[in-house]
Amino acid sequence: MWAQNRFLCHGIDPVGTKLPPNLLKRTNRVMGRTLQEFGCNLVEATADTSGAFKPNFWFWASKPGGGLWALEQTVHHAHEVAPEIPVIIDLKGGDVKDTLAEIAELCFVGIGADAITINPYMGREAFADLLAHPEWGFIAVCRTSNPGSDEFQTMETATTTGTPLYVRVAEAVDRKWNTNGNCMLVMGATYPEDIPAVRKSCPKIGFLIPGIGKQGGALEESVAKGLNDVGAGIYVNASGSLSHASSGDDYAEAARREALKLHEGILAAREVALAARA
Image (cartoon, rainbow, N blue to C red):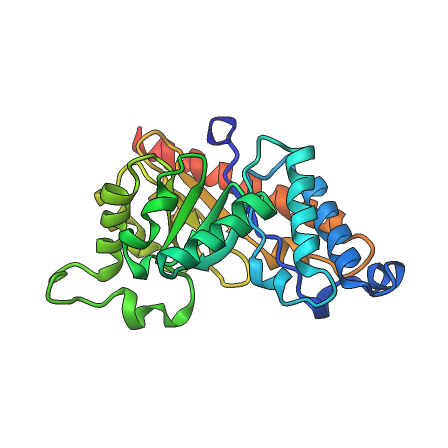
């Protein structure tokens, strides 16, 4: 997708209170049917500008009446209409080995995801069996975009003196976990000043960059600092600003307009950054 200049990741996160009223009415408020139509329409509307789709597992699983079924249907539809676009399940899963095997069964085999986000706190040993599958992707939480992320992620410990913990996490994932080339890192756009340290230490690994849109992340700066040495290696994620760009019948068209605008903004920022490197 990067070779095709696709750097936008569309986070498809259905918020129950923001779903279009007419959509709810048309589907008789059967949540599974509502979410299926919502997700599939968004996939179709943004497939020509997105480089990845990223439904957040919990926005779907929390909906009674077929939320997980609708997620599975949306992922399968994405594979049908845009088979080249990877689908990332935003789960941030992290547990002991047996539990992670069940998570993998659900996300990769059941739902049909290409990648999942993970919390690496349990260490490589817990993920070793999953990482051995080169066809499965893993995006490790490193430097997140939420305001309270400083509590742990920027800490210095006895083994990280002078270097914040998130850099050590990045280095471990890049050098020890990524032997099959199936790992990426989460690097929040709300802290663009922290991206260069990770990019310098991990020059080739891909970044998933959330925080653009409602969180106010810095697009141009994050793109410029996140690009790898060949001018690729990033997915800039936007969720609510796309999926809920409108609560009317034009929600899919509105999502497409916003996705196109952000896609063009990413390309413009990349062009400026590459020109500055020349």
